[in-house]
Image 1 (cartoon, one colour):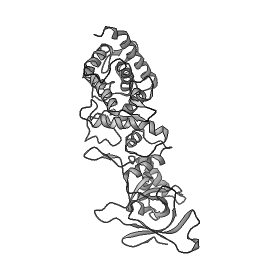
Image 2 (cartoon, rainbow, N blue to C red):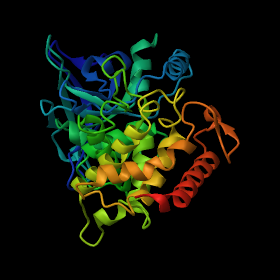
Image 3 (cartoon, rainbow, N blue to C red):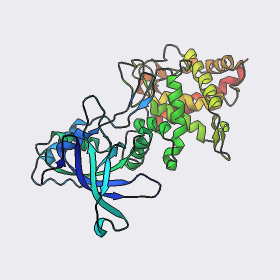
Image 4 (cartoon, rainbow, N blue to C red):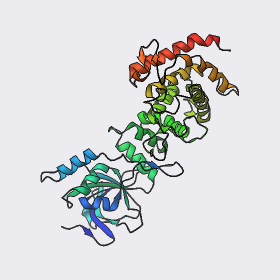
Length: 380
């Protein structure tokens, strides 16, 4: 039977499932060609003010083509539904009669308005971006597609659902960390512990007073708009998280675990004080791609982050003279560092042989801390 629609709507037989405390779910079917007619793919990007918009992965061309090739076969089965967030403009009309509902679900007709020229589409893909793209390219445009949908005009709610739905899948770490600060509802513990470090990473990248300003690459980073972004965001997030969650970390005292409160201003002051001194101590290594400077590399960021715990364990970053004091402490390790050339003494590794693997991160961290502890007695 052809799809029930007119020039303004797509109407489908649907089941409505009401779950306590959440928007109702709708289960229905679309034809392959209709998915992207009514639904947009919202990819992660930022507006002119730097605010995060969207939430989807970038396209994976090879995977999409594999799905297209499969859908073009006569034996294709498509059991996994596309998950959509619908605008509040959709309408559901329950069926009449005693058989319309069974206490769990109600049958009826869901009417979805077709997009008008110059207007946004009435739906957004929360899960199934690559499958939707493949469906739009298959030769079988009338292929029936299962759809699960909920009504949500709020991008924040859509983003929250996207994270939860994809929580057990291998989402790119950078995409997860960038989305976390934008989610207001309670998160699983594994994600919640990364929310504060990711929010701090956002500020460090966006604040012109930060030594990291414009240097951090996030999932939404446009290379043309941010040509200086050379540090992967997950490295900064991991550096902050390690210091913030370890009792030996210099950022740990800024957390009040009993009250579930965090002194973000104090943490930002500490981070900016220390890393500004790092930038000024190693100007020739700062801001370069990791292929040209291991200071901007994963091993460099992590190792200098662990040194930060030692330095700021001695210097109070709230003191007016803290920037000068931190610089003096870093000056004692400067002659021993080989960020852009030469060989790391005791490590017996050329500068560009340092890799972002656990063994190298640990060896470089231990070396820098050992040099620092041996030399800091002479600081005046």
